[in-house]
Length: 266
Image (tube, rainbow, N blue to C red):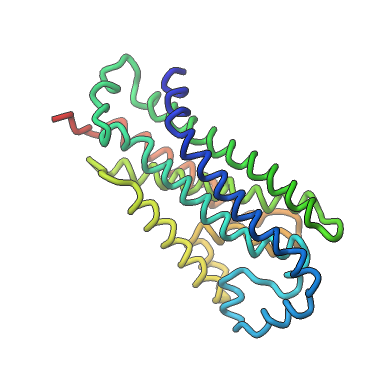
């Protein structure tokens, strides 16, 4: 319990910063929605001038772009990008931090097993991601209620926002798995940003194609907002694949970290 609470305190500042950042991005885009809704025809015509591959890469659907949920689905890709970076930072740092901060020896000589260490750190990271999602959803719902010009489906709004947590869980698991392969990691940012932006760019390129199988390459494309808005559910094969990625990555992380040689403080 002490380790879990300590990790919560360690992640608290970062969680606040990322949560406020995502809320600020949402507030910025929601603030311009009323003017877009007022000039819906002109806005749609403007976007129709974009090439179809560009619209696909940006997640723009002309059929519902001027509705609140349609506009939000376009904006939401930036929110998931921020959330993925946050989760990847958590994943890469929670186990490697002890080596970087020269506290690994102190921690590992305690009467606690390595799996227990991983569990406490993972639980703290998941708790902070849940907190981010709860506060972000509350703020987004309030902002949407302020700027809406007609009723919208709260269920669809919730389903769209839930994809943020699912994507974050995948990147958290991937980050933890990546971190256990490093003996000593000096900085998490290059790995976190490189991995997330790499998957994001691949997702944007995949969106311009017609092969659905390519969507399995990038976690950002596991949850198609157009599909969610049409069927009010998630695409089952991709949801199950995402869950499998989390389970496999976390299981491998436990196995590798339990046998890993930790570099002593010199």
